[in-house]
Image 1 (cartoon, rainbow, N blue to C red):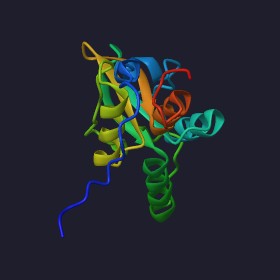
Image 2 (image 1 turned 180 degrees about the vertical axis):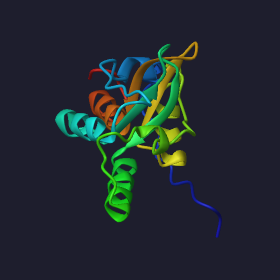
Image 3 (image 1 turned 45 degrees about the vertical axis):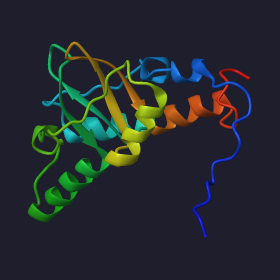
Length: 157
């Protein structure tokens, strides 16, 4: 028995518009940014207030130097309780992740979706010329895919 192709018949023309949608088109430009000297308490308050699970840590020139997440903050809370240390004066510098994967604003939507699958990340800082210009999340990719109407991948249909 031969190998069967499970790819259906291709109907209609390929949608070139969908291939041209980039991270720049779907990223969030209203970012919640953190600095390494902010306290864990302050970061937790911002995470809760803005209903986010983490965000980029930047220096004074908006270069990404880390990422802080709810998990990083929980680790600090746990250690603070264990060692009976106050959290008010503890900065996030010690707890943030410093190995940061960033993404270019010019990568197309489908390549960005693949990066999310491979990396298991929930969001990427979008960096251009070493400066953060936005953040793209899995939800941003899904929102844009919904707009494309997944079945035909025709923009705005």
